[in-house]
Image 1: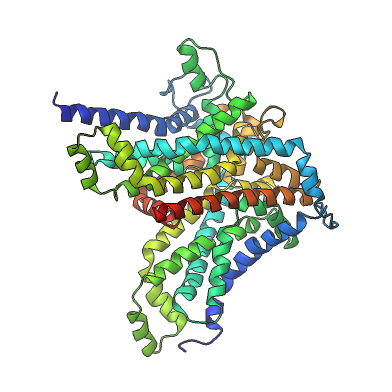
Image 2: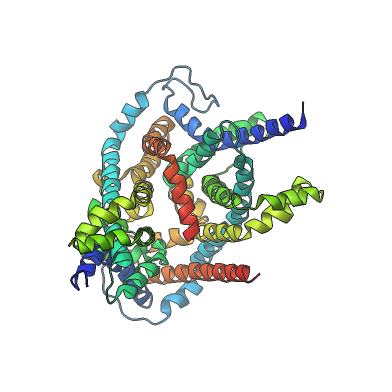
Length: 289
Length: 273
């Protein structure tokens, strides 16, 4: 032994304490609370699956679940495809490429709040985008006041903010695509489009699956973008509310229904875990091929 | 034109349009923030007729934006220190010390990565209330103060170090803490920089948790302060724009200074996936 038996635990103490107190315990407590009618003031009786029965009959839950799901479905394809195209554009080392790559990454470091406020202003009924629309002879588009357009606008913001992040992941992956594959395909007379589909895409499939999973999980968890673009309301009549917004509004404050909010959180957790397991399965199948 | 030139021109055209899409919105926000009260902010004009920094002073008169900035800086600064030190200590124990229960400790860190923050939001608020830390900056810092992901990142960094140097130090009579601070920590500087950067950025950008845990305006961080500013003063877009620039400029400068570490962090994060 090169150390006393308790020494490792002294090293681990701060990290373990934070992990147990602020992640593991709240997680277990959330599962327990999901089966009670606990309120913000405390207490709460065990009520079995009442919260889940209520949820099944709660139109707000179905609306929020639908919105989160739509959001996820809406952002995944552009976030898998567009950053790949940008990465291919930025992959070749040409003069000034460093400046371009750095600039493309800038939206990633800005907070969701900053990005949300910038786009709220851009998409304002009299904002820059609508000025361009009008100049082109169109009529103003209610990007932020129509509940469907609000969701679509938020997706655009999420995609815009994700482009640079996933581009960097693709750049790393592209660097590992063997060059001779491209050369062989060229010798065989394959054009650039053909080479993209039969050389680049197959070589990048694991990365694409990873990015699909990351953006799906993040898409389902959406909160800040919609919250800011709608000024905290979730759109007209709350029609753009998502799962996390619902959890936050149900569980928060003195009137917070902690039990019901926990049940909603539990459902959110199960869905996100499900997404993760599907990805792992896809990745495993990938390995076998 | 030769085909090669033609191709290169096309590539630059593509790069420039993506550049406009990435940077344009920031420039528009900056342009709005320096437009004087006499200028119509709705006119799509990127270069103001009479640029002024008056809005930056004016925004501080309607909300305590510099207090918000100090709060954010304090929270982010503490977050960097606790993450670098706490995660390095735990990572070192997991990688370099042999003891009963090591596997168990590693499982706890690994499983807490799987818990999405949004799912424990309400429950975590109850914990903070139990500790009497709601509406305090301590309450904002604590949950992310030692992230499990950072513990595992640093564990991997320590595992990659050769064991011989430390074995020699053991023979020389160095205890575990001395080996940690004098030998191991200086050798993982690269990973520490990545952990520090991402801790700072994560903390500076965090919105949902401060929104839930803070209620007193004097304690607001910049992100929720800005959301509040937008809710209250949306009629004067110049002020909101000035506030967003105050919030984003420090990060952009930090990023320009240390960009290669940012890119490395993203790469490593992806490999971990």
